[in-house]
Image (cartoon, rainbow, N blue to C red):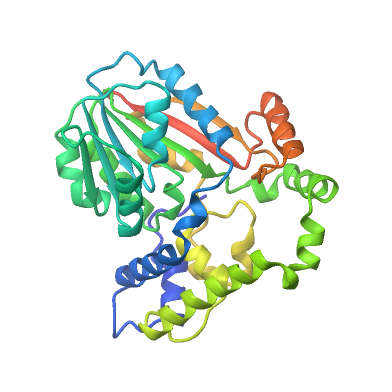
Length: 332
């Protein structure tokens, strides 16, 4: 079970090993690694397969009957380039007010460039959710959306505490496209590897990585990130791409690759599951939607993997590598 109040966390060990506590705080360390990563990586998030995520949104919106609620206040935490904003539009969800909350300036710029938005109803909030929690708490009839963002959180308990105090009876919390962290222990992951061996180019790509233009571009990107973080004294020395990725995607362990970083056991607070999130929020929140998908992981637009993912989702609702959950604040 995930330890919400663990005195030592993985991030503490990483900070102690690779940075300088005399120069910056651990919060500044995390923020600067994120800023640098997205500075060189923001374009990677534009051209990805999202049909199954959109299907989840259609399912949950239909389940919650949101299309007819014209007084809805939508709070989009970690809004990125505007994927959730697009889903609201595609599903004809009306709203009285839309709070777009995003800490990364590059993402805020992307969102503003890509979307013609009615400023009188859309509030662009550049910062953390905590910066706007008091304002959000004053709104009624809220839908709080966290899409592909929850796994970036490091201080999860503190965030969920803010959710508790920022919501009232009838408000909805939607956490979507997040990793199922016990997937690495599921038989599905072995089926995943076998089918990718059969139907994708995973083996040639791995064997020919040094001759790939795409791989070379990716190596250059990691070199730039490392060099900038060292030059700005965020890191004392070069670190692996996996280390940086796990600081960014801190709560993701559906592939079990955190163990490759050899974090000491006393610093490992574990990895949350949907059940852990529900348990921490307590009886004051009731489950109104839950589903898993991507039983064979991200298809990468491979048609065979796409079809098999859809097929398996029909029969194994809790066997996917990603989940979507909706919780409603009740009167308890």
